[in-house]
Length: 224
Image (cartoon, rainbow, N blue to C red; front, side, top):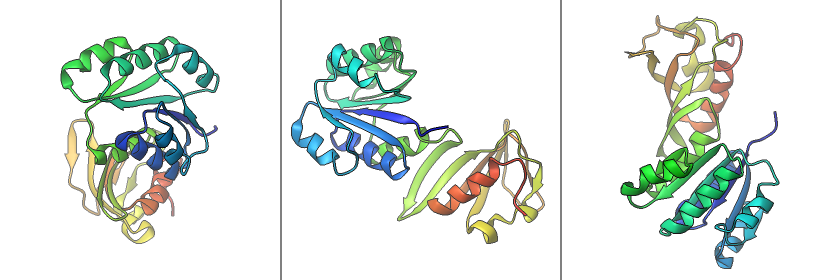
């Protein structure tokens, strides 16, 4: 399976943070803005940058000739432009469309126009958004400090029931498992507890180490 392709429309502070974070996560990122200066700044992170008016359907037809898995509309302070871009992307068959708006009053309207997600962001939520949408197994993401994060991971349905003391995540991956969610049940874990298929696991540690642990949760057998 190839890398997912993301389209970020609008390269203000929020949009640029989404671009930078997705690129760090090795995603395929296209970016566009009507402002040439912003597009030039984005070239530092991805060479797939366009100076264009993303409200024009013809422009989006050309962009969507590439397979766009997820579009993020980060225009923010221009509600009409956000609406037009959302409608056009929906008509062009883009399945996932996340729209940034500044007023929650318009959230329902955006959803009716085709947005699958609507957010009212702070700068930090751009980083959170990019991490969440870049990997289907990441259910939630919080940056703590420096490279340390708290992430909620979905356990594969192929993962065998494994006791935490056997998994030994602290020593093998240098991370801590701080919670297990099983249906409506929250478990504050001890070494004798188990991780089962389809659990949600809350972990804290350096992101690079959590990425390694995530591969174990998505495998058919626990690492020995």
